[in-house]
Amino acid sequence: MSNGSKNEYIVRTKGVVKEYTMGGQTLQALKGVDLDIRRGEYISLMGPSGSGKSTLFNMIGGLDRPSQGSVFIDEVDMAQLDAAELAYLRCRRIGYIFQTFNLIPVMTALENVTLPMIFAGTPSEEAAQRGIRLLEIVGLGHRFHHKPTELSGGQQQRVAIARSFANDPAIILADEPTGNLDGSTGTEIIELLRRMNKDRGVTVISATHDLKMVDVSDRIVYIRDGLVERIENREDITIHLGEMAGAGGLAH
Amino acid sequence: MTGPEQAPPASDRLIGQAGQRQVHLPLRKAFGIALKGIQVRFWRSMITAAGVLLGIAFLAATLGQSIIESHQPVLNEQGLSQAQLMVQKQEAQVRQVWLVSMSLIVSAVGITNSMLMSVTERFKEIGTMKCLGALDSFIVRLFLLEAGFLGVLASFFGFTLGFSGSIIAKMFEHGWNVWRYLPPGEVLRGFVWSMTAGTLLTVLATIFPAYKAAQLPPAAALRSEI
Ligand SMILES: Nc1ncnc2c1ncn2[C@@H]1O[C@H](COP(=O)(O)OP(=O)(O)OP(=O)(O)O)[C@@H](O)[C@H]1O
Ligand SMILES: [Mg+2]
Image (cartoon, rainbow over all chains, first blue to last red; front, side, top):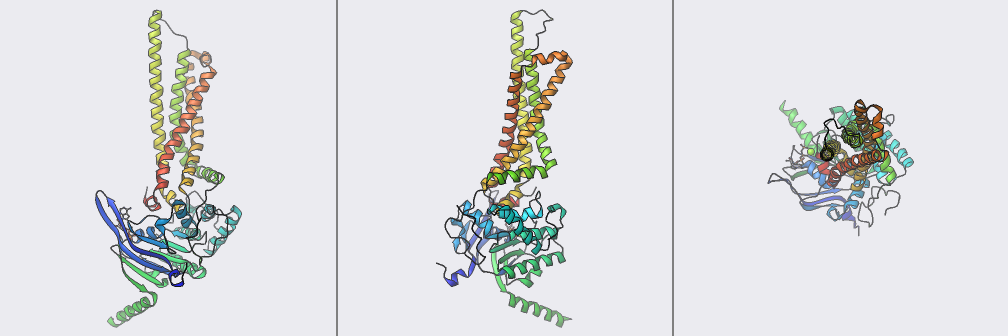
């Protein structure tokens, strides 16, 4: 079943169209997106505001259904999955990170991290142990019992990252994870994500405006007006940046 | 039907094996989370509960008053005939049924409003929980349990407050005699009525919006900003 070349791709989208109808008007947020993402890649989705990054994030994460086209996760069409199978996928195979952190406000850092484990049926003690380890990995070893309101934005996002890794997912989806953070905190978060990507072989797909993301990405997918405009590899980017620096140097 | 098998490493296939379905959480877990939710959101919960409490207090006060009035001795200062007294009594009964119905409607509106608010506030939380792997049924159950707790508690205190209020008010008129106009059977009926109405209304007013929110695609629930 799993032949080598096919299995290389963990996520594939085929002609994904998403339409929103509002007050009789139809808006195409995505106009036919074809995108293949390899296992273990760190991908950044870049594009101006309103270009459809979050919409694509929702399609890949199984948080909404495309109007046309298909999203394949490991060669399985997500449209074929029923609600319980989708919930299973979201619980164990995909970790989500949001711009607004989206921690459950009434729960402590540790409870937030262990919630997906509870949904996965992990016994409480084992969940607590794994939760503590994850919080240590993201550098919050001493803040298990703090509520989200008692944590800074950067710390909240670290909890959210620990939570996204709760059930050892294969894909991490992040929608502007640094959007609500200041520059240096954002850099720390990006480095943390990159480290998790390297250490655990998890595929990271991140929508972003943040140019710092370019540095760590294996590929950058530029989205414009609901379409993939171009895809750049990391090597090309480095050359690009080099050229720009060079040109800048000459001009002065 | 998935057992607690070891989570396969990230390199394994994600889906496609038969039977990989999210399991239902035991009720005990939902119970624990719901209780914690109320505890932590204590003041917010108390405000929500206050809406229910006041509605039921109003209902209980009307019930108390109507029980006392139907048993207090008829004052006949104007020297009315027996037939005229009968008419007067019937009119009073109609007025009381009308009052109780009105108070039921008022409490229903108050309760629905409080519970709708508290579910709407938590749309984003619902969306997040679905991203973490919650089944729709778990979310509905969570809200049902929370509403159940709140409903029972608020109805109990609402009844106590409203009913004793009506008794105290009537004591100004009848003094200690008021206890003679309160047959235990009817008081118990009023209590059961108030508890049922309060709990049922609270649960219903929560379940419908929670069910609708749980059924939304997570993307839509996450988008809602309050
Ligand atoms: N639920 C919705 N209903 C109606 N229109 C929507 C909805 N979600 C997105 N859109 C529209 O679809 C388009 C793409 O939105 P999307 O949120 O995907 O952009 P984005 O690239 O993530 O932008 P940003 O960088 O600002 O987050 C926008 O024009 C937006 O208004
Ligand atoms: Mg967006």
